[in-house]
Image 1 (tube, helix red, strand yellow):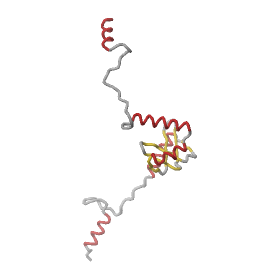
Image 2 (spheres, one colour; image 1 turned 120 degrees about the horizontal axis):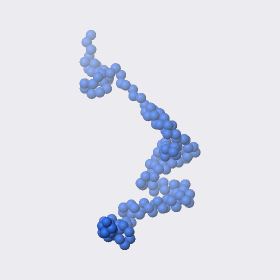
Image 3 (cartoon, one colour; image 1 turned 135 degrees about the horizontal axis):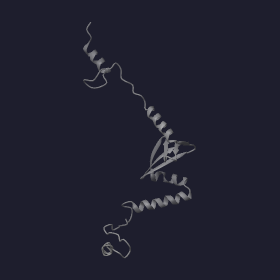
Image 4 (tube, helix red, strand yellow; image 1 turned 45 degrees about the vertical axis):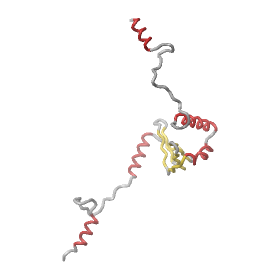
Length: 159
């Protein structure tokens, strides 16, 4: 009995995982899932000494004009290692859309800090009103009323 060439090529194409010249395999290798990465991350965090912080309903991360918002996240922290881990499903939103909601969560002290921060950003960001121009070309004086030349002359006169 002779095999049909078409059928043989179809079978050969099904088991080949690479291109021309690669090794034929009987079945495709099933790769491990990424749970090993998660286990490795958890063991590293355990070594650092992070502790779970319960009862956090919302985390907002502000970046430029967007807000990354986590609702009911799992939050872990290690104060000694200055490490905070926020895990959960993030949502990216525009700052102007979420600002009224965030302002409701802030107390009066934090609201003052937010206003100060907004003024600072507006003062230093380009295109936001008048920019303070500083003349960095001049060399500052050593002591008010003295110049570098006078200080150099004093040094040579003292020698």
